Image (cartoon, rainbow, N blue to C red):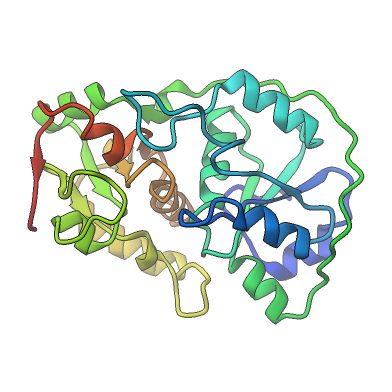
Length: 282
């Protein structure tokens, strides 16, 4: 059996020692970019590697990009191989933020053509609550070769989004908080508001109080109420920089609403060009 959206802590516990399974710790904090690696050193799941959002899962910021540009796929493929991931591996990714950062690596692996990747539901917090093993030992990794098979249709550029909104051929969903979406608060980016025409669904709405994802039928009802009669293939997800947008995309896939896409540059890229339409309020 393979996992392609979420995996429970119990299911991972039963399989974690298998040689064809690779676990990756994706903990990160925007306010302290070294905190995730520090927490990893203090304790992580057995055999887990560490992936840094800025250093491993993004490329260099330029005057035209958002805050977390997509990494060069060749560089990422080499890193995956260095972490012991090949095209047959079952990959499990986790964080301590409900999947907010792990979802980025989940999506990147799918972009590289690898669907055997799942987010640990409830993350390390639920794992620890169940008193499952935590270690400070670094994994013994045997490097291998990962061959990417790019799924270029899985993401859109700013131009594609602008054209899609103008032609009404896409439904754009913003995963940021309502306050940021409405332009009432903007703690990170220099311009407040949202892409004109975008809908708002904060990624936190996908989670129960336990930090686990809501049941699939509940997620499905909520997203269908948001997108109406549109097929999921017309849905495009965005956020501040192309990270938490992956959480909404993951939630839709897990709910059986398959085929939505990512606007990778998201808000921080959109506002680089003053000619792109911006709105505030609801």
